[in-house]
Image 1 (spheres, rainbow, N blue to C red):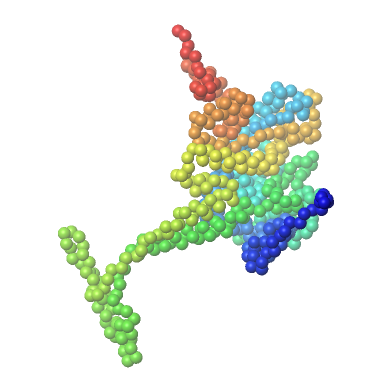
Image 2 (cartoon, rainbow, N blue to C red):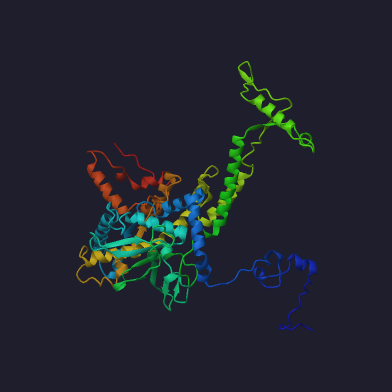
Length: 535
């Protein structure tokens, strides 16, 4: 008799013994990660909470610890400095790319508009008088670097877009300490006000409340520390007034958390371990040798017996002291020979410090820290002794991908809104003229201000190979000269060409500029074979 297709064969299953269940070899849920009976997970019972309930209660403590580590821990300080230098650098600036197709204008207009806007931006952003800074202490690229540093350490970058009528350009930026963003009168977080941020029903950050003085500032008046000012997120026509950037990891998140949070404990433990090893090495270096007395507990007991007054011990110590006082020893062939009190011995301190496993242990910890920061161990430790070209190149590509993503995110979330506010002033004040029949500026504001932000280039591991690779990408239409210039050297291709044209014009007669040589030479002899010119 054939078996019906609806009848499923029964698979015999082995029943686990009590010992096997206790050992954790068989789970009680489909997902082992959800099994509470497994020994290794029995005490691991985290809770699911709303994201702000996870971040806001402990955010101040995390921020304080992260700041302390950056102040006092060399690894943390170096990691933060390296990322700021790699992502923002010294001249972080926009490369304007107005969307002329969306605007219904010509490519020629877009090119002229780009040149005008970038020229005005350079004058404004790099002004050594620092009129762009409300406090007149930094240039615009420097403020961007400070804001990014705050984002790394404190988890968010915060600034106000001000309007100062007495400045040559009225749009200014004021960086704000994230500690000042808080609920009025330090009230508890609620559904519509959390961490100093007002939230609408749709989850939009509508306004921000800023404490007018730091609560722990020794110079601040108590009245300022307990006064708050409400600032709307946007002003008239959507002009940005508050710039607030952080990594949003879950829906409903209102404030950011330090990028160092996952590795604070590792950094502190590594710092403590290094201090202990250093202290031990210093003590060993200072106390290299000592003199051992032959007196043991039995001898001392005889000196201090029930009827003894200890005079014998005191006399013995006085005799040893007199012996070593001003003792110069003997000289034998120019070498000094030290004489000891009878029965005394020289003892040497064991100088095996740091511990033999210290370097390997520190490397393992630093690899964990580097992974948490999103950089390579070689970058964090500045240790390239065990790295060849291939591994260095692979590490650079991997790390640079993360740097590029963070640069793009920070530029769009923090820098671009400020650039749009500045561009609005340039248009409404008449510094920039829109063509006849151009679309309304406010309706197409993002299209007029569309930009790609340029920071430092990723540099070269092997300049010759990477220059040849860049030339091949351009020749195969996989990239452009503009993109290669921005990625490899952090420069603007249009500015490079203008400078090269000036250099060619200044070259002596019958002298060729290197740019005038065939571009294909960069591809190497395997791709391009130059013909020998005939006489």
